[in-house]
Image 1 (tube, rainbow, N blue to C red):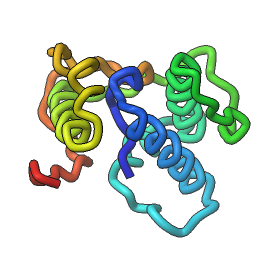
Image 2 (spheres, rainbow, N blue to C red; image 1 turned 60 degrees about the horizontal axis):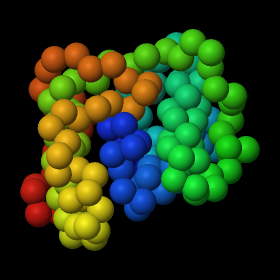
Image 3 (spheres, rainbow, N blue to C red; image 1 turned 90 degrees about the horizontal axis):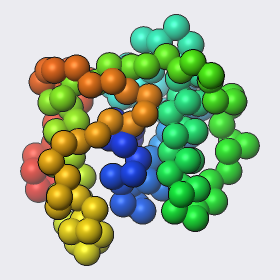
Length: 150
């Protein structure tokens, strides 16, 4: 499960679609509708919120916004709640964003290098997903850092 901290605009098609699908799974986990992934570390940041389901819904709506911009059709009816007028912003470290951008670049290099050149090569600052605010710091404690060649 990868719940990107990066702005959805940075994600290639496969990462955007997988992020949507995996976040819908996270929503099911938080609703108690599945037995799998209940202890997944990437869910910690949502569980720490006063209303985890609303935070996941706000996260999903931002992914769907990017899908709309690209002409994709993501079914917002699968999101358990409407978008919040005042979302509960989650902190994410600069180190986490840098790690994710490098991770994404490595993935895209192998599956769609042309897209990577057009959208990631000139990216020097990893912009966050709209639900997140950047704070200085290392890779997040919940991240399971993968070796570079995975």
